[in-house]
Image (cartoon, rainbow, N blue to C red; front, side):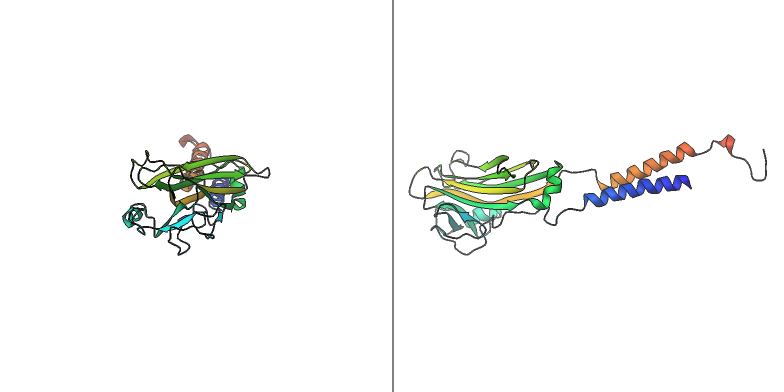
Length: 248
């Protein structure tokens, strides 16, 4: 009976740990950037957009451009290669333009403050032929003091694109700094020459995940092994077993 009680305690503990590991926000692992793929409106023009859903435009001029809308711009074939949808972001009519949005991380604070929350960030960044116009995105984690650490992707120049029109994929995975409560996403488009800012970005992505813990089956197996060890420890030796009816 004592052995069964100890086994039950071990198994209950394992199941409890499994349950805790699955008590996570519904958006865990999903893209938290709103309209990171430039698909939330039907602008599709080379002209600057005053309002882009999900984003604050720090300088007017950022464009939402349709793939294949001009012969020299990224084509529908480019979109198919990167799963870019109908549209992408471009720097537009201004020399240096910026998009910005804030993401609330409070739903993940329990994991962030334990140091076990990891983020995955990625995007496609590009430009036109031999032009060095470029787009990049900064991910800045904020706390009550408003700044912890920042990471950056993009800034792909013509050399990185081999002088061709198109996009290059970049990604990053790091632990979210303890104490972070908010994320500022800033997309910057820098024009190096000419009359149009050909820094491009598409499919911007940011998600929060928990650092992988021991799989559920490993926890349960540990409980069984512990119970087996207890069983071996308390099993009587053959010499201690008496035949029924015999009194020693």
